[in-house]
Length: 595
Image 1 (cartoon, rainbow, N blue to C red):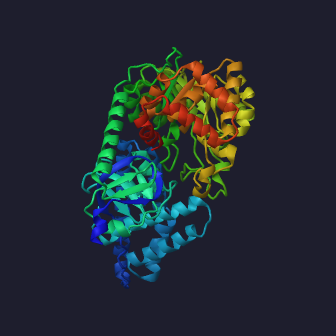
Image 2 (cartoon, rainbow, N blue to C red; image 1 turned 90 degrees about the vertical axis):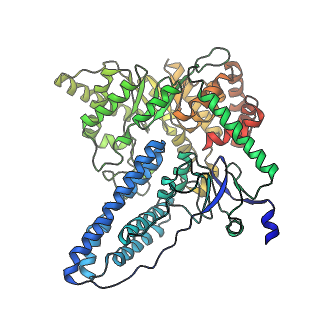
Image 3 (cartoon, rainbow, N blue to C red; image 1 turned 30 degrees about the horizontal axis):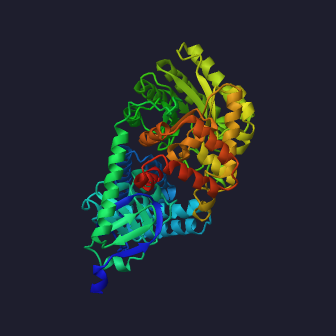
């Protein structure tokens, strides 16, 4: 045993979140203590219920505190995931029903709570859909939190562990990933967990490398050894040699230096080497991101995800509340254009006010479909957006439009909003630009009709890939098919660009590929006028734009449009990008853009 402790050990796992980390292992193992069962007197029922209510209240407060921390970290996906926890904690099953069970059984709150939550978990675990399987982990996460508050037991927090720790855990629940601070948690390594898990989504939004499917047997015997986690390949290196350690330290330094250099070039314009200017804008969820957009020289906000205003509320926000958010956003951009997308709710974006129990929410009542069924809610939002347009340049965008008839109906509601504001004597921009997102194959195929009725088009590649390839991007078993480099997706993008150009309107891409510098040259060659990505990716994409020329971009696009497989296209894009950046940084920049 002692001999292999001294040598370098390499274990291959499943890469979940890319990046490289070096540190000491921290074993984070959760153990369920036995829950006591004892009877209570009739006189004690009231206090037992109050004790449970206090534990539930503390649990909600803890989750809200985590959401505030995630907002500071810019991990907005995590905020939405934890919002589902708050929704579950408002469920009658663990509020009124649980209290009634305490009264009926005259048992202690811990025992009743565990019994009900076990039943809750079983209901989700028997459902085959991936979304419900993941919800089981959410329920387990909530159960642990409430039980801990009931028993007033201590908990080790990932916010308090030593700096540069490599966290080893059997599995991770969302709140554990949420409380992790990147300065302390270098990486996550688990035995279980997939790339579509809620914990993985939060880790990715924080930029924390993550590898799963690792056997802990050798790890436990090397608690004091250094560990390297390579989230690009899924390799975990225990007790690395001096040569290995030095090589990875050098790679980390090179990557950090390169990124710092890019971050310091925010004043440079997004134009190719031959002077072709590209509009580079940001996807924004929170007001606090405006400062980062300005720092990195963004040309505006290409997508404001307005649903984040209401995602944690039980009801839709009022017109005044929405107006204040939009107004602050527009004023913060100081004249630069702001594109506000109307509520894109449903599918993976929940809310207690949404239709429940749809067999396939991604193909159901979501986004514009929902708003057209709720015209008063829709009109309220449109009034708020129009009012904000008096304070700067605002563009209005409708999501998930499947046919031109939906666009016509949306414009009718917009006209009613205008008429209402006119009657009230409220000022707003009369010439606000209107666009729609191309996210569904039917919209791409009939983009000639949309181009005639819109001032701009925006391609949402995340959903376009999902719907074009009939692949649920949340389904881990099918994730190998989800590839934005698929020829069908590339050809649909070109089709939309052709129709937009024919009608003299700009077209943007605001999906994940807009943040991937490997796609930048291709998108420019296809004729895309604007790229919109998360603010933290602006420097990397701007660097890719400044490293190409439009003539070579057009040639690359022509070449790729003739290819027949995603693998062939991806290989060609990687080669093109590899030739445009320093060789030793290529794989590291890939890690950053994917995380």
